[in-house]
Image 1 (cartoon, rainbow, N blue to C red):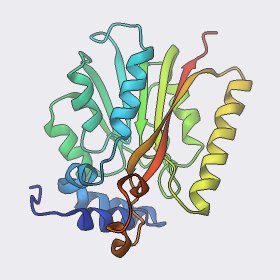
Image 2: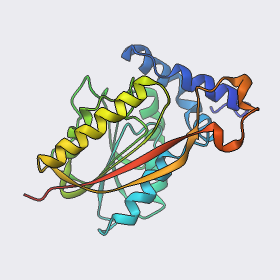
Image 3: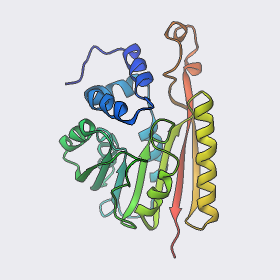
Image 4: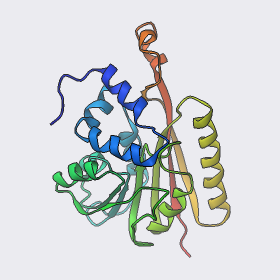
Length: 238
């Protein structure tokens, strides 16, 4: 059950803990965090799901009711809960945490839910099967490696859309990850695997979870946030 007494300080501490370099420890943390996951993300004004979905909708011309959606790193089912309100009905979810998948199952929105740790296990998705592939927030160091984006592309139908939203987290590792990610996205475009539909930027992706708690109150509201980007690609039709 969600802890209604949680504070932004609790949420910030959880975000600082979730990026364990040890995959097993990270999964165990997410299993224990599952019940408070959405609460903590809201406390940090986390916008990755809305950023990705809004950008996707601006560019999706197919039938919402008929579209098959692959929700990668689906967590508690947040993406599906937002997209079902927009008329989407067919969801398959993948996550590395059994605790998160248990919450996603409770939504009743997923036709299938599959356990897989991105980067260490193959993405358990049929090649060329999805009209929409979406991942929100997991493309960061300590989570999904850059190589996962090729698997996202493989899962999309020819002409299907792949939507990825992520934050520009501070630190050398985050900056290096972004460079490697954008290099891979460009390389895949040069290989003819997909074409870029566009980018959507926000200055208020989420409150920076790595700020010193003693400094947070001294900062103006806009100084507390990190920026973020949604990337949208269309799979090539061969």
